[in-house]
Length: 83
Image 1 (cartoon, rainbow, N blue to C red):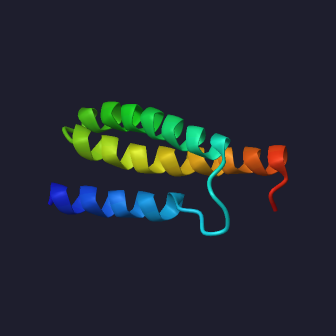
Image 2 (image 1 turned 90 degrees about the vertical axis):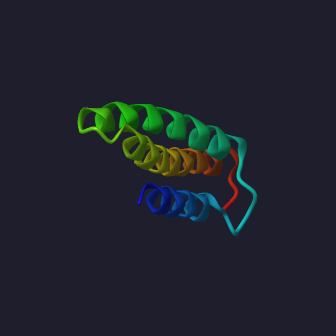
């Protein structure tokens, strides 16, 4: 069960972080990495309280990475005027 959840979350994170229109800018990449690290740490801590630290870290990394990439992409659009 853990393998299925982690594989699904990994695939979801890869799809959501991909950008079809243009290559990801520096803020998008930095935001995704930072968000994933913070999300994994927070998810691991919260998940540990219920005895599911690994699942919590995986979910936190996926959510944090997505949120960080979206924020970084918005910063790239402001800074570089891509769209």
